[in-house]
Length: 165
Image (tube, one colour):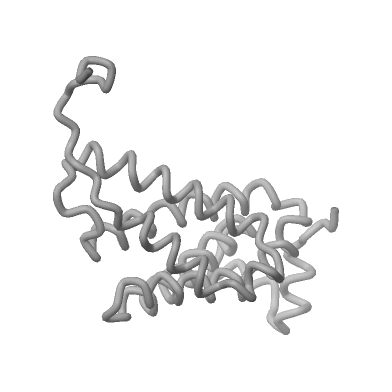
């Protein structure tokens, strides 16, 4: 594990420690700002797509391109903090995107939250284990994930499946 320090950051960025601390209290705040800025850009591009499937593809491409930087950060002493922040922000932006693009218009809010959480975790797991083969099959993966995301899910009627026999 490589220890990430403010000294490393200011040297790499050619700024003073004072400039760093003027903008950030410390490295966790810098990480939060970087993640928020990146997700804002990613989600902005994805949501700007008129076609929802194209927006999902845009998201995947941007996530794949960010992967080497994320992996590098995960190997630092801030890896756990970075993982937590990424998961948090991804879940928030993912829920925003599915609501704004109206993926499940007939579902009540409580059911929609479950669907979003499920798909969010599935996509995060998929991205964590992404391979070169997956990159070659990107269009097929995006198409399949899109259809799973937009499947017609009937609203829950309050009855467990066992009671419907």
